Length: 250
Image (cartoon, rainbow, N blue to C red):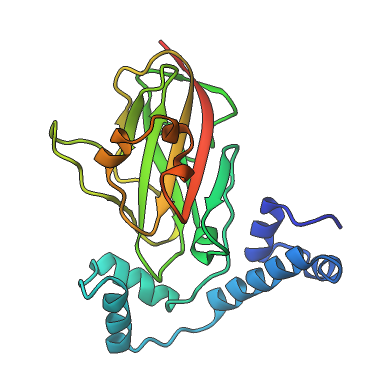
């Protein structure tokens, strides 16, 4: 058996994997052994009964969020998952993922985010897929990270190097939009809105999603070095970056 792929890992987590073959391979591969332990922990957590002390749960979540009472939806998800720290979903699809931070950071393995067509939200974009300038785009994601809120920047850099925001988006000109929070969710979710990119230059372009544990300023990112738009890991620390090459047509 070769090293575990993202697809076989997800199959194993869902109960469809070959436990014996993977365990045999893991004897000689430390990386796969770690992923096997992580997958078994997820399967155990998903099937084990969860007992929740509501008072303690609320106190822990409020402490994580700086004593700010979280939304009821976040509390419901946290209660359902028992605040378990699951070991990691990996990014699927045809985009590329870069985790940037010092040392290992488990939260990045709990998140999957992609930009997709609103008309086909269950289908990953193909490599160099041609997108019409007026096509509505949305975000597809999984997020089983419940120990802290996560924040997101999503944007397109067109052929002329201009930046076009997908999330968060400006509501009023000159007024910085509030941070886009990526809420925890048990399964696959779609972002609450879709965006039609305003006047992108035709030609090769790149879509980006940057996920972090701290909210980022849209205004500061726009004012920063233009090279950071294609290399956002230079502007932020401890982030997960998804990028995908497309072609804008008119």
